[in-house]
Image 1 (cartoon, rainbow, N blue to C red):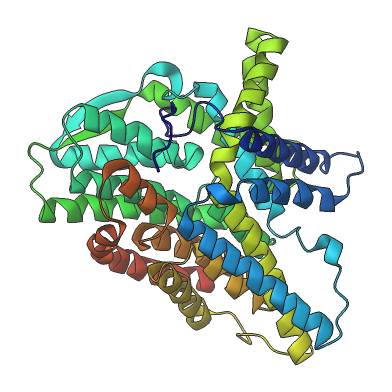
Image 2 (cartoon, helix red, strand yellow; image 1 turned 180 degrees about the horizontal axis):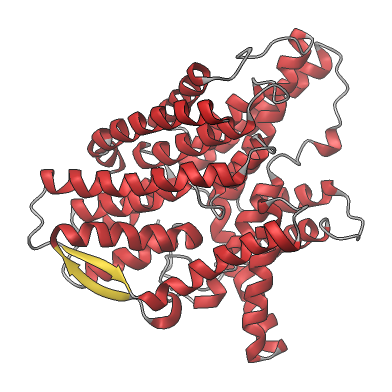
Length: 451
């Protein structure tokens, strides 16, 4: 069946809603975000309402999901519900059914909040000065750095921005696509604006963020070094174009990161980084739009809700269903064992390494990293675990798993946008994943020794 053509933004998102149903779903997502933000104030809001708003949007957008995401999300939700049913009728556990939809809603709210940063650039590279072309091996590292710095804030849209620039100037080859893949996925090691950080903080809420960044950021930089050393060994790069950001383009991502740190350590230290990002980025975007006047700002926010937010249906639905799965699995384990069984009695180097390998292995067989993280979290006693080490394991597993996983969001997006097979990307990224895993193992040992 032929579908009608529709215009898209530079980042690949629809410029107009394709149906009233999608527009309503986008407004429901916006309501969920506002309800979550209101929870940070003295205004009393039932947390269940946040989950209801997001799940309503997920149900409205269900038929728009790609088959893979629909299969994974539906499977997670079904398993979670079945496990909760077993807890209730097999083990006579009291289940608060009205609250079972709350899992991962704070992560979803953070992702929605981050999306509003797009209102600052209106689909263009920050500051209107995207950068310049580079060539050869130096172009590889400049491309990696450009995607990494922009992607730490803008996520997947940074890949499209940089990739489309390179493609328009002379073609996009395998070496450049691998660089785009690694530049973005490595931001999961440390960026507070990535979903990986939100999930890690929910899994290990007491982890020390400063320690995470002090290990995750060098690990990300080593990812760039591995890419710079490996790619030229496999591809002739003399005529390969790269991309280098202009200094002005760095102002927005660096200022956003500095602002988050200011709120976290000075202005609102009682709030987690996930909570700060949830309200701060939409607030900054709204203030930026206010220069055009209140009516114009309101119109742009509503347009964002009707078009951009429904385009987030895949990650929103997957994260919500993973939350339901985690609740069901952890509840069943507690009910069946009397809360006496855990996967590991302690969480040291061996346990952290096995957990990392489990998350990456699940990504290789086609599961989203959040599924591996969720399964791990449901089988640990978080009261006895080093949260900083656990958080680092989640982030590093996510960063490497997203790069090599054939069905990860980044690889499916590169396949759809630039025509390279996601399973081919997995095979080409095996040496990179092995090298990064060795670095992760060393970092685990060092972090365990220092904490």
